[in-house]
Image 1: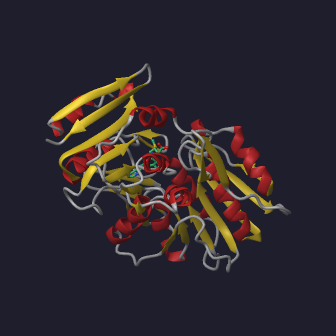
Image 2 (image 1 turned 90 degrees about the horizontal axis):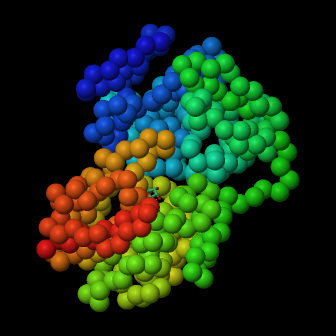
Image 3 (image 1 turned 45 degrees about the horizontal axis):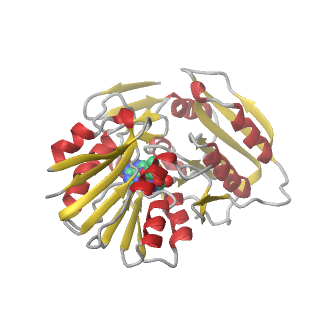
Length: 374
Ligand SMILES: C[S@@+](CC[C@H](N)C(=O)[O-])C[C@H]1O[C@@H](n2cnc3c(N)ncnc32)[C@H](O)[C@@H]1O
């Protein structure tokens, strides 16, 4: 098993087979890789199994490594992110493969019983549970689930969740600081629980699927932004960028019913949650990971608590490229209002893009920025 890396591609070889995988969207952080040792361990673990007649499901494959490696077995691949789906499509092309089946969570039709299910354990325990619920409903009685992870991220809560759905839970030996949890013998579940939580903020009720950002309460940075943000009368076309459960859009629409809000998020479960929270309002939903679907110079205001993590990795190249795209989508006179953790120090980056950048408020944890396109 070996891999080699160049500036242009990253190849993985095992048992005389090679695949070529790149991160998508590309990142400026050259230290970030498109797969990790737990993906390699899954490949190795399954290499002694005959998968030729197995029905295979893959959950949470990050940049298509597993989908591409197991492509010949026609797996169904379930990803939550639009960028995850496009990463699989991008790497299929790079490897001259036909398009396989890629679905979002909640979309799997219950018409097949699967024999082997692979899951890269997500950072969110709630999302892990949502995936295990779906797997439990779709796996055959003799089916097996392989959960891949880096040992440094292991938490006993994974076992607690897994025990709700499976009788037998084993762990492999660690290799290159990664391990697998093997789940077998699905339990009988009498009453299934809907993977939805309910939150309250300022008298408003929000519902969201497990694994959507800030599942215990509305995020404190977002609360800071909402308490201090007022729209001008002229601001009618508004974007809630990286919208999560839609809390920013909903609070603005309650206060300013005449505005039209677009909500954009990379996460399918976030967009589906925001639809639950915004259905009777003047809102449209965009499931995407950049601002390309939005026309240039079409927005009066963009409001955001932007992401800076991808699972366990911190990667500010994502928000930084969003800031440039925000500038391009704002009309002249438009405003970008954004909250961020103090330690991210975005001011110097924003000043390279916007004519005018002000810190409107700050506390020990957060900074609220207002950027104007003059
Ligand atoms: C800090 S949360 C804010 C969510 C919501 N606005 C709130 O305040 O609760 C950031 C959101 O960005 C989303 N996200 C991450 N990367 C993204 C990208 N490239 N494009 C769009 N959304 C992204 C995540 O799914 C998450 O919902």
